[in-house]
Image (cartoon, rainbow, N blue to C red; front, side):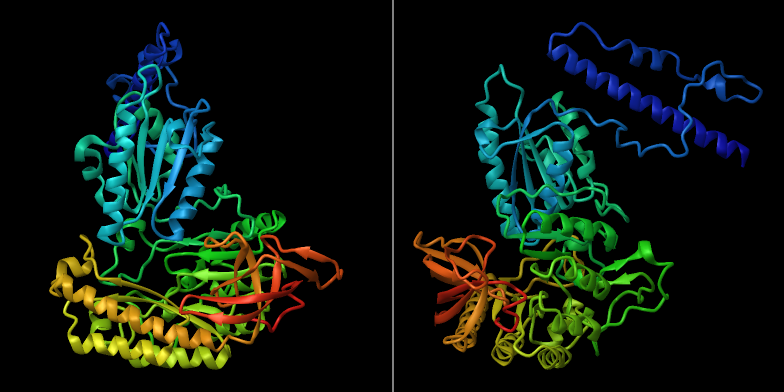
Length: 574
């Protein structure tokens, strides 16, 4: 036992010496490239004065106190003092879901703290970081194409400038790892979703001409102490990440393998960010997570009874029920009390995590939007079982009915996958039938794309032909639009409360915003009366307007603005 402890001590010190050596080499490279004469003396002395093997022999008395006395050594892949950015300019591009937007904001907050500056012009950049998505093959191919464009810019860079460093962040970095570094040598830095704190060090290593990577997944990283720097000047809406990872292990999904296990931010950290956004004038916050409504703040686990998680009726999971902590209903309750003039949304949930207390909160609170995303993926119970979703078609439809009874007029959206492994024509028609039965307001529909590492990749066969997948997808899209058109047509003649986002993309004479159900509403940019002061004014982003709907389509509504109002005064207008 004593020998084992001594060996651990030896290995720890050797690792520390190796770390000093690497830091010395990196600093030497930087000094030489800048024409500086030599490495600082302190690093040479640390190496020269370090322990020898004799220091660990029994009865030996080391002459030098070579290690700092700390309670816990930092992880060997992170430096205590990250290298400074020296005002170098960073250009960020984001691909994929809103979680990647949130990740980009976290990464930028870390780099800004380290002395980097932001640029929105690619040609000015010293560092180009692409925050990537791996959910489908097309998403990854888009990034590979973009890498070739950026690499061409790197080759044209003047020799008098620092070499342009290119980094891949996020899910694609986690999934492909070595392939990204090796394939055509396009990339200098690879950082997975849990390694953003290490970005300053990775970029420092890349500055010396080496490739650098950190794709370690964490069981507890939530970046709770990092206040994201929001990347757009839009003060109307913002996304707040409340949890990371997913435990559901749906057979088609790569997320558990690229973002790891579920872990949630403490409520105190989330509330701090929401209050900050409220102070900045943000009028709509969307709570984000891969499985957002399975939120469980384990930091409060000893303060609350260790009761098991309550699932939607008839739903199941592949994992044991989790006990204790604050749940999504607790978070939703507290967040909705921060600012009565701030709308609250959340995405993306799983249908299994809608206990009655969550539905009751949505129904009661005027600032929690009456809009719920219920991703179903397929209308066939057989396919749902193959996907590992934990429910049947019948169970899902019962939940839809229960939600509509609890929240009259609720807006529903969903996700659909066309052509999953083993899907027959009858399975597909059951999905078509489900679309017609539920009649969603918003839909996200995709052809199945098999991902390596998923359970489907190892256990199932991707046996639906590509042309069949796309034919089925086209039919699903057509049916969705038909039903959504009918749903939206019912809004004509009704007055709705719209949060103004800014000018319409199609006409500078129009403004665009979203109603409570998250449907886009377009209306003319004309003077309206302020309900409180009675003064005529032009609407601005962040204003709430009452708009009378005059026309509709499957994807948007058109109307005439009546007057400027507030969220509290106009409760009941959706």
